[in-house]
Image (cartoon, rainbow, N blue to C red; front, side, top):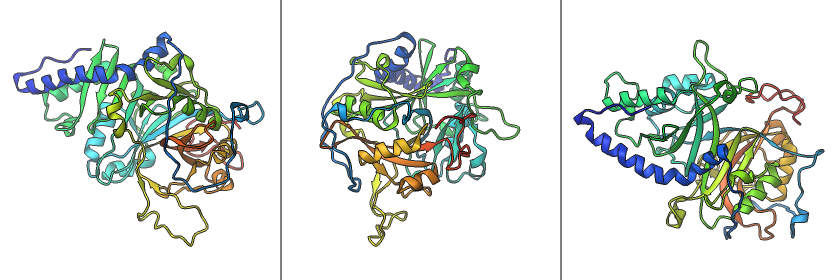
Length: 423
């Protein structure tokens, strides 16, 4: 799994690659620690700090929590748990579907979701790139692409194939499908031939790991995304982890309690470390959502932001005559997860006053009944249930989905095969 020998004309690329490998090794050393610990075990120390940001969401009735005994913990009768971290939604550069296709489909080997195939063919609007039972939702930016402040870890069936593609790209073959990636941020580096670090065309960071058991890691017996007739399944097997960078003032213990309180999602102590300044939250049995202090240090804290609010735009004209609460639209990235008990999660989020409606999207839920009808609701503010001041630790939009409709049928977009007995 080696880089091909380069011609003299490619010496600049070689130098850039060498520099990238050095930089990305430093950049990813802390971020990849979770992936190493996942396989070898590690310390279980959580780190706590303070925060001082206030919520921008409309005021609603909320409970006062003075001590940990008041925090409602999931029980066998009313519990909620996360079943699946379904997708990451991140904007790509408008008008550059050629770059999107080259990176996600021709390099990573994602499969094209048939529900967005017309957009793929026309080179307009949103495309969905499937990887096992998970997805990347890729809407057009306005016009710039987003750079996610974190790292995305995926399991892949064959890293050698990825390196062969990258070597052809370095050789500058005229018929190479990766040609649109020239003059972008796209770079690839290897760590010990067992871990590939990839920078996408706009600067997003990926950690790609080889699979010891592709059939088990794809988990097609548990669920899958649809595949176009005549097309092969994705080469990528799973989105194993999304690491979210947070400021060094972020209360990691508070984030941990937020996920336990709202979603019944436990913190995995064996993957949470004072050395990596991170916590990992279980997203079902196969995935994690990791929150880590930015590896560039406190100097990078001002750059850490996962939301982009707009208070006046064409989706929300701020009509004060409406009885509905007013929320700013969010054009930042978001994650989507399926939970076992949507009503329970909604009520817990309501108690913390973190319910959110993004007018950017067609499906909107202002009430529990609407959430049940829409099979989803959203939150954006993370608040420590033990913080009586309800200060916001971090803003990251979550699309929280139900596996079933009101009448008990499986929700049409849910990739899980069996949802019987989930709720």
